[in-house]
Length: 366
Image (cartoon, rainbow, N blue to C red; front, top):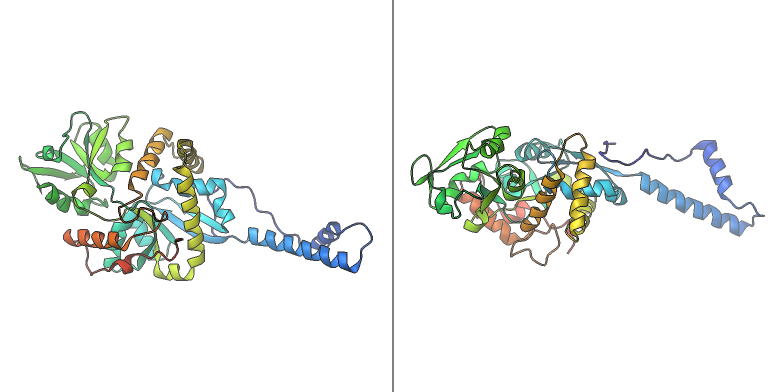
């Protein structure tokens, strides 16, 4: 069985052989036994044993996220800490990732059952032959942004002209740079009517901006703004405001896994719907979710204020006009049509895609 990252205690085991017989004898009544009471007692004990057995038989499922722990992982860690996965009959191996693209490829290769990733890049991978599909969408609105200094930076995107913006080549944002700039009326490059995008290493992107080595950086709003709030606060120009559309974070798996483990994936979705609903029901629950991440990853030296800010900002991206009133996780065919159009405009799709080829709502409640 796959190991679980959990704070739960050791497993209990069923007694066997003579020990089991002794257990049955102790459980039966000490008073004189009639045939009726004997049958009833054994039936009750058997039912209890079945319940215990079912509780102990947890279905293994590996879930790999995009990166090191941050706010978008809150529902997974909260469900782990509260025991909701076990209640759903799941033994979750929650794995940290090294990037959305890496997680997409590992899930596509069968190295992990499920990925929590940006679904727009998942579709790009699918068009290149990775056999994956989304079965739940949580942040259904695109969160891509150009972030600039909140105090001294431009208040209007026209002010981006001539500025230096950093990004990194392996980023899920990088493929959308040119189409984003085109929508803003710019080209990439140096000069008064261009925006100078400079590729740096993943580990130095934020520090380059925070230290004043760049005028801005390109990332996800709910990830980037909290990340620099204590060093050089930023505000965002959102791609969604300029006609770019594709879904952000959700679950994906191979079509084979979706078919063969449909019941387990449905129960996984139920835990996440429960967790996200709980998180946004009360500000105190956001604090609880941040603490759950820290409790699950005590060696990562995580900042609770940063996590709470990221979790809070995730709420902004849960709905699109096409998903309002629908359950958490449900995805709109109309949104996927817009996503395919945006990715086609950016020249990112090797093979043509259809909305139904990218996602399914079969594992989400109505």
